[in-house]
Image 1 (tube, chains in turn brown, yellow):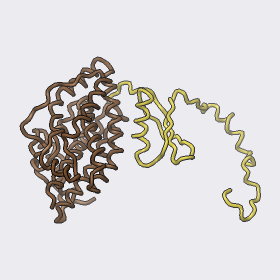
Image 2 (image 1 turned 90 degrees about the vertical axis):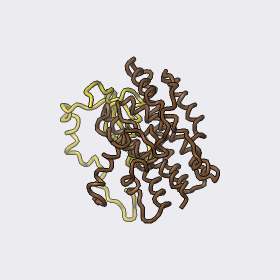
Image 3 (image 1 turned 60 degrees about the vertical axis):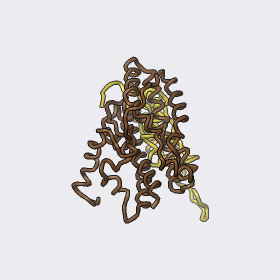
Image 4 (image 1 turned 90 degrees about the horizontal axis):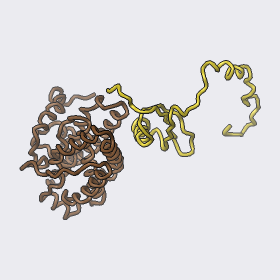
Length: 251
Length: 96
């Protein structure tokens, strides 16, 4: 088994899985009907991407493991999502700020993954990039709207970015697993995405009249290594409880 | 859900296939054209319903009044000959 590739797929899948669950929690609570549906659609796209990556991870591991086992039957420290995906839905400004930062990240990540040699990962990325392209258009539009909206809207979106900015550091954290995969053209290092990400974020912030917070580092451990924020445990408790109550249930 | 002002009402038309006419599929609320287009995409085209979208402000749609229905539409009731259904179609003619 290629353990590097397995871990890499879990990281890719878990980012989508946990972020999609956060969005699912918000279903029916959106600011208005159209936006409620739109953001939930984004969550469903992310869940589809996560399913593909986790299925591939399950296939790599073998032994009859499925994507459902990986999604619902791992312990907290076995999830490898970044901290940014875990933060709660404090209000719609936070949801959009989190989404925008992840959309920019996913956009440049998938753009690079399309070109790698692993046919499954590049195939998932090729399908996902169209979805993410739209997600990014949407969240960019909202950030600019809120930034240029009323005094309250610009202040609240700025505050949301300020308070979650410390989680962006992890997006570009790179370890030997990523370096090894990049050498074989089977993956990309997260650090290689930083420049494009920063350029895009700066461009949108300028259009929105927002300022880039300066704090970055917040933690000695990172989600991608299995060390999580306090928020993930509660999220998993809810996400996994049905599976715990009715293991292998079918409908 | 907020009961605040949710923007203007728009009517959405989706083209099911290239070359086919756009059909009315429903309406939505949005503050401007760009937001209306994104909302229409998310509300009405997620299940392969179409390949094109038209949106117009509901205010700009001129609609007939139900009080005019008698004068407008009833006179056609006894004039079924306005449909070309009384012609004999020769055998072998297809696509009519």
